[in-house]
Image 1 (spheres, rainbow, N blue to C red):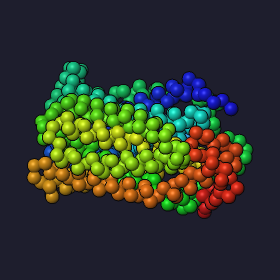
Image 2: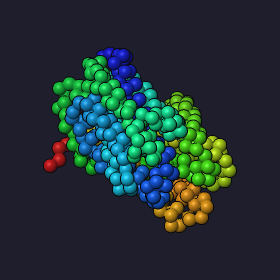
Image 3: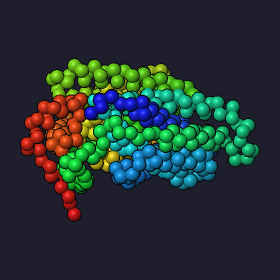
Image 4: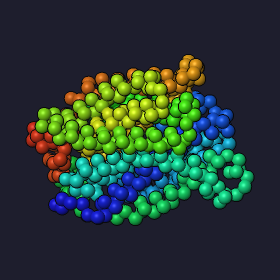
Length: 472
């Protein structure tokens, strides 16, 4: 078996990493334009929150499952290219919105297109990279996604501030009245080039296939998602609900932080984008370094539990830091807290894609990641709407938006830590069983998993295959 990925694999990883950066820019533009959208389209804080919740998160959840199902059945390159075209067209149409409902419809299509990105890519990586390099590929893509969040908000802010450079290319009329409309159209253009880049990804035979051989096919050919979820619901709840609670908290903070800073300190979109971009990028690099060091030193002691316990530590740090926003007295202090929070959450989250891949049989990976997206986005639906409603109706005084954000985020982080701690045993049991069954079927388990070899040996003879049985 070849143990090193060819150049085509690295091109594919680069292409999907740039695609996730592009998706981040689209989302950040919508956030940074909240103030002009509020003024020109006469939106309330609750409506702005619903664009991120009802519009973005809800439709991500709705689209994720069918896209995950398709990702397990058709050419993933074409599916991802189609998703990019959909969300590019949707972001361009945001520039034509005339009110809340038309903007909400555009955001819904934007979210539906972006929903396929994570399930498709994380289902694709095990097929294009040898097992020995799968963890590295996951790590690189995850890092690109998070670093892209920082770079994306900085680029989005720069586009907004410098849109006048391309204003003469637009016809007079609708676009000349509000420059934010031009921003949406300009941001949509790279989608055409991204679509072509994804279609140029080459298929090859160097990585472990989803259906490795006849023996693997007989056991794993059509594992049923219902059986998997029924048999391992405690593990699914134990890992996805904490992720959702953290998404609720991070959305409550980072969705509204640009608006809070612009209102409180009269900062420009470019200043907010640069400051938060640097904070997110620096936090990502620090978090990745902490994750690598933590995994190296704690793996001999914690084994398979290493990523879960590092994540638990990160969640506790998030909960402790959140109230500090209330005493921050300058934009730089806000950026500093955001930087440390990003370090905390990235430290554990960077190790989770491999854990999720190990939790599911090969032919269920797309759907398992899709379900993860659905559960996470349910909380993302709740978060910005709740913050907006609290700001509009409860905390109506000056600084009420910040207080609303903290009131949602703090408890979310704390509950996530508790839920992850309670679910650890069930998560580790599921990972061990899936690895053991994959080994029995001859599908070459990942030797780089956290403690996987020991778990495989212990469970080879008695792993419970009930989730692989067919259900009517």
